[in-house]
Image (cartoon, rainbow, N blue to C red):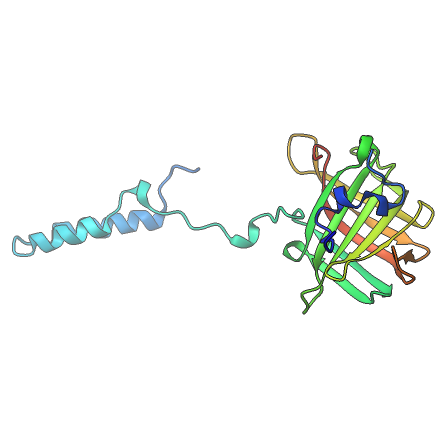
Length: 231
C-alpha cells in the first residue's frame, strides 16, 4: 500500500479512529442623464462637413441605458465555500509534531459528514504548514453529536495525520478528548448543510499508530462544514 494522503481517510483508514469503525432600481442615474445630454449637444452642433465624423462618434460613445455595464462585484465579498465564510482552524501541536497552526478560509480544506450508521459526525480539516510543502490533516469524530443542536463536552476521537511521512496519531478511545459545539448555522434551505464551529480539548496525548511517539493537542478552535447528506 502506498503512503496515505489523508484525503480519503474517511473511508480508507477507519480502524485508526478508535471507535469510528465503518459499519433592480429602474430609474436612470444622474451620471447617465448628463452623459446623454452631452451626446445630444454633439449632434446639435455638427455641420454637414463633419456629419460623417459626428455620426461615427455618436455611434461609438452613446450607448442605450440598458447597455451601460454594471460595476463588477467586489471579489472579497464572494463567499469562500470550501470551509464556509468563517472557516478556520487554530491550534498548537506538541511532541512528535511541534507546530502552531492558524488556517483561515482559503488556507484550509474542510469536509464534514455523518459517521457510519448515522452515529454523530466526522469533521475533517487539512492545510499546508506555513512556508512548507508539508500538509497536516486533523479529523474530529463526535459520535454523540445530534443534528442541528449545540452542546458541550461531547466525547470525541481525534486523528492527526502528517502527509508525506505517513505518520498517524490517534486516540484509542473516547476518554481523552471533548468537543464544545458553540455555533451551528444553516448554509442553504436543504436542512443538511451547516457551518459548524467549536473548541476541542484533550487531556492526554494522541499516540502514534505503529510507532512509539505521540502528539498533544490541549485546545483546538475550529469552524468548518458539516453536510448531513454526504456519504
